[in-house]
Image (cartoon, rainbow, N blue to C red; front, side, top):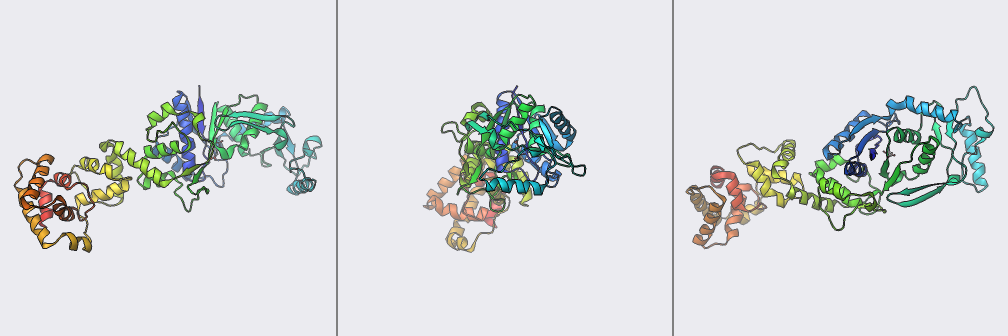
Length: 456
Ligand code: GLU
C-alpha cells in the first residue's frame, strides 16, 4: 500500500511551499488508495510551538487535506529513537565521539589548510578517547566508499559519493536524537513508501538512505519538488509576501483555487489550467512535477480564483461570504435573497472580499462621491427617476423579464438611451455606478426597497 507523509516542523504557520508539498503527498496517497500521514517534527523544542501545530492543522483542514493517520509528534517518540540509537551502537553501526568543539575546529582548519573538504576524520572510531567527564555524542558510521544512488521521481537519477558524507551525529551529548535520525526512524516505523518533499531536503536524502540501509529497512522512493519563488525569482519573504496559507483565505481566495494554483504551479497536465481536486487526483502523477523552481504569480492566482468562484455553486459560497460579511461588519439579513445576489456577482469578482464589498450596497447604498452626483444626478435625471419610480410602482408581476420590459418601454417612451437611465438609477439604488445590470438589482432589491431608495 502507498503510504505518504507530510512532516512539517511547527515553527510557524503553514506556508504555501508546505501546502504544495502536503497537497502532492495527499494526492499521491489518495490516487492510489493509500494512506496520508501527518507527522509533526517538533524536536526543535526552542522553536516549536503548539500554536504553530494548531495553525498548520487548521490550514490543512481549510484546504481539505485531511490525514488518514496522525498527527504523530516526534517529541512523543523519543524512547523509540533512543532505542534505535542503542541498536546501532550495539551493531557497531554507530560510535561514541568525545571530541570537543575546539578539537573539531582545529581538525577542520588543518583539513582546509591541506585543501581537503572538512569532514570528521573518525578519530574517536579508531582511537576512542573516553573521558569520564565528557558526555559523548553518537555518530553514525557512514559507509566509507561507494555511493548512494536513488532514482528521484522528480529529479531523476541522483548519485552522491559516500566520501562526500560525514559521519552524522545522530544523538547529541545529552542523548537527544538529531533531526535526520528522527526522520529516518519515523519513515521506517510509519512504513512510508514515498517521501514527497521540497528539494531543499535533497542533501538529507543520501544520509537518510544510508541510515535506513544500516537498519535493514526498505528504502522509500523519493520525490523532491521544486521551491516556490517570488515572481522576480527571489526567495519569498515573510515580510514582503503572503506566505501563510491562511493569508490567502483572508484575501478572499477559495481553498480549491489555492490548491489548483499550487498544483499547476509545480506540475502540469497539458494546457489544463482549471481543475478541482477530484480531477487533479485523476491526473496527478509524480513524474509530471516540474524540476525547476516555480514562480508565484499573484495575478494568475486571482485569475484561477475567479474561475473557481464562477464554477462554485452559489449556495456553497454562502458560508464563506457570511463569514467575510461578519468580519467586515457589513450588514445583511434574510430579507434579500443572498444566494441570488452571489449568483449575480460571481462573474464580476476575482475574490470573495470584493464580492462582500459589492453585497454591501444591496443592503445599504454606499455614499456616492460628489463627482458622480454632479455628473449623473442632474435635475433632468432626477425627474426621469421620479417617473421611473412611478412605473415600477405600478408593475404587477415582479419578475426579471417584466422589469426588463418595463425598462425598455420606459427608454422608448422617454426617447433616451439605456445608460441615461442606468447611471442615475445605479447611483440612487447602490450609491455607485459600478454595479451589475440594474434590472437584476431592481429585481433582487424588490419593489419596496427599490421605491424607497429611488424616492429617498
Ligand atoms: N520537517 C521538515 C520541514 O518542515 C520536512 C522533513 C521531510 O519532509 O523529510 O521542512
